[in-house]
Image 1 (cartoon, rainbow, N blue to C red):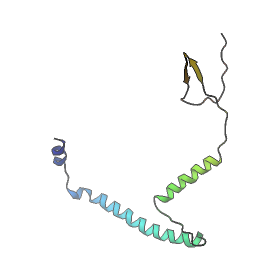
Image 2 (image 1 turned 120 degrees about the vertical axis):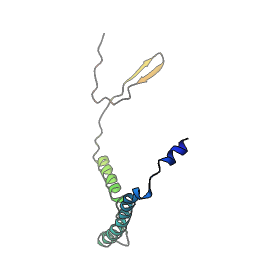
Image 3 (image 1 turned 180 degrees about the vertical axis):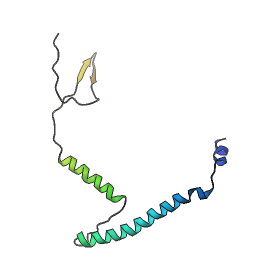
Image 4 (image 1 turned 90 degrees about the vertical axis):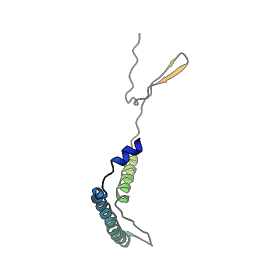
Length: 108
């Protein structure tokens, strides 16, 4: 039944012409920009045969890697406490977030 229903909803191939043209444009621009920018950066910044590649996907991914490296470099450790309680030989832990401030226990 599913097979028949899917094939009854088929559309003419020309409906997807704009998607094809957009993909072709991205592909060609990746080739032109990537090829030329790679050559430019390799000649300008490359040393001793080092290749500098530039691309539409590669550039944002490298930016994310650099951002994460900077976060790691600027990390400042903090003391924190975890809440554990033992009840009938079972250890319960508070795992939602770490406690930044140590709270005093109320005495009974």
